[in-house]
Image (cartoon, rainbow, N blue to C red):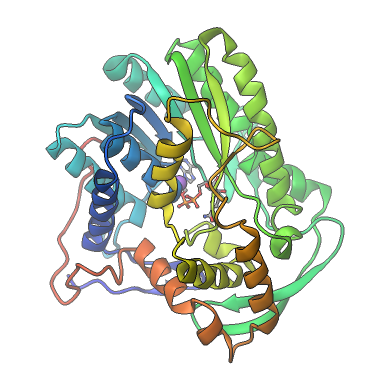
Length: 396
Ligand code: NAD
Ligand code: NA
């Protein structure tokens, strides 16, 4: 079958197995090229199939030779439909890892549910005994609460007033003004329920209750701050409240892990094109300007460069983990550099449909977006029939 991208709004309905596999191989090669990290040995990654979570799994496996269990929620291929990209990514990762002699197993289902936590616990017990690193990298629009069965939906809204700013449709390049109505209390509570720290704490509680966390275990969840430009819709909006809650949860988890000398961190990561971020208004315009500036400065990074740096230069240096005044790890340091932000703010003022192709990296945005689905990946011949991938090797 020849597979082509089929767009609907901000999502792509198709994914290319060979492109996804090539992306995984490229990430593996990058981590190997950076050399060994004296890092984790047994790792659980929750949200392991795409974005920062996939990069976390690859860095653990190929930087430190770690055994990994990946949890994700992805679609297998079905009649007339390709799988979701994270499904192909995971199939490729499992195949590569096994060929390299690395333990890898995957669990596909709702990480918010009791059932998937139990399945994960049983797998750790049977195969690994304990884990020494738990990465929490879920990005989801909904969460069915395991106790109340209420389905919470997250929103991306400002708080306190209507937010009006520029945005771009990155498919057409059209820059327009967008107004987003403020959230009500229910929107805020729902967003915190989905993207806040409660589920992270539930995972850690469940693992600890079964004595599955090794002495000195670390857990890390991912957050974002970003510039003044996007503050009203991101950090001071509904999603920002969820991130505040996630960050507060790190301290609560660290307290609970004191007896095993464990620690919970939040790492603040750079803005990047992922399935999650392309759905947020205003952010794609910011990212396309940011990419332009960071590429010109030679400091652009993708998810794998970010996470390799997180492990090698922050978490596993042999010295105390450097954190900011709020106790957070910062790998958004290059994005937030004053000179970078000053340039982006200048470009922001000048951004229109006419100027953006020259002053922003719209082409880079689009190509990164397509690449998430396995399209426009350099080493792949798209004229050839795509390989059929029908199973994930280590699926539990
Ligand atoms: P992503 O969409 O690429 O990855 C989300 C992962 O969560 C996938 O593996 C998916 O399968 C999994 N998932 C979603 N719902 C699930 C469910 N119910 N059960 C099991 N798995 C589920 O997203 P990402 O951009 O890598 O985001 C990961 C984290 O990083 C989020 O907390 C996000 O806020 C944060 N972050 C993202 C950016 C960015 O610019 N993309 C920047 C900083 C921080
Ligand atoms: Na992820």
